[in-house]
Length: 398
Image (cartoon, rainbow, N blue to C red; front, top):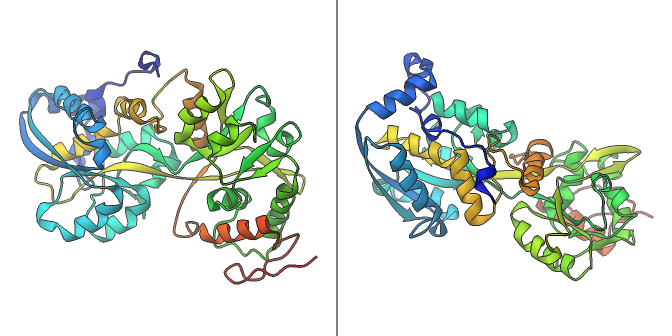
């Protein structure tokens, strides 16, 4: 991606004095200009330990690049920043088990936020850091790092988010707004066995995973999915989405926002297009599919001995330029809304994050129930039916 097309955000403004929740009113009330000036004029000596997945550490890694940039942005700070490879899945356990060797900053998956809070391993953010998070991210993205009204992380990339890739030689921009219109023009595919796709139809209709599948609204969605499964232009397949596009089995697929490179390779630059998830027609009304979204974010340990530098570095990792660097490295969608680009792929995917996504919560995170429903629809066990107990065996009627 051409970085010259992006609006450059002043790094000093992004990493201005950023305090944790609990700062004094005097500290919080300072303007960004005053805080930036204070940071640049003050000397500070700090040693930070940073946990990040192995692929984000080491020579030529994204983290190495950001550490160098952070030091350059703070010429009067004497900083020593060390990294340790810790996988996202291991963070919460390692925080609890290794109390004598805690980091100052670490990267985490927003799906683990409640566990990190319970372990007292993550600091609530406030002051200028909180203002920046809220001003530069959509409310949906902010919600991924929010718990009981408090914000605990600085998002730096999307995770578990999906969109629709399509062949623009088959579908026009107007047609891809509705899946039913698409099925009249070409083939659309995704796996009915994948809970995140099935749940999108129910979430779009205002339900969550606690849905009563026997209710009238849920039955209408299930009936729609049965009809979709029987459509001659719908392809139910667990095969790699890029392969399905490449061999012409489908002309459009649902897939992760991180799959753009493989989709472009499959269709070619001249034919590849990507957009937010479409609507579908339910009982004569247009219903927007709702995708689930989580983020990867930077956190600060409350007991850090270098809390000022730690908060500043966490905020730096979520800055527009840092996210752009991460995208250039991994091609995973950035979330900072202050990024401006002419790249259609990023534009449409950010639009998906803003307008067609919901945040997983304790009430809608159990997609296994939808996987069972999808399996029963795919196998023909569920036809046009009412499901009495979604967690029990499905019952069918003609």
